[in-house]
Length: 265
Image 1 (cartoon, one colour):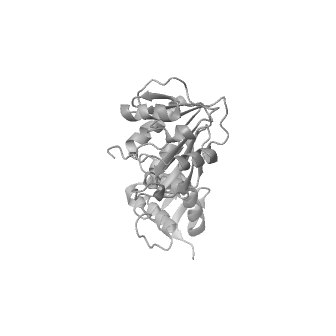
Image 2 (cartoon, one colour):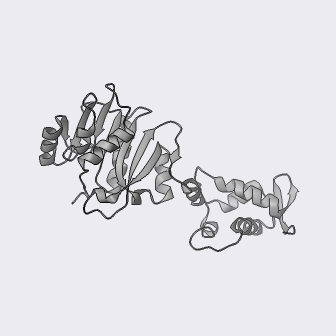
């Protein structure tokens, strides 16, 4: 298990392909970038073109025998491919840097509408920043699958589908965009939202602190600049919360400008 490889049971590979790639046609070309002994390639319908890449020479030879498909012996990150795929499917080694590199190359090779379906450990999707970084390139959908389809695995698993689209979305992920957005706050304000904070109204406290730092009166833009760090995130949902909170709890001096003196709650 040097590469954290767990070969997918053939029955599970068949069901995953049927569920997530049921619309494959003779116009498609499917590739498995870490095909092992070809469990997923054997699940691809015979009328669909497919090939695999496998870094281990011995395993690549077994994959060719098992599947009857073309198998490229090499590292998917750098190896030359015989065709340009329209879809990728498989169960890559559970190493984050490797999976990230695989996804980068898949994105380079696919046209818009192309898909990637991978079995991956849930832990790879645990942090908002990782998912949001991937979502800049991909629409991502996921569903849990049982870890005990592999006899010795302890990590929770999911099957994640990445679709190359110009306008991306997330399905099955909640609070990821908002959490990543809060990473764009400067440290003084960010710490108010993380950990075991029990503040009754963290947004009101945030605006109050920002107004204090601005001298008691500030425009919305000045509040945003005070709260945000030097490397803001693209998603800034918190700005609307700041605007709402300022309007609800603080004195409006003029349009878009608020003062520290609070109205009665």
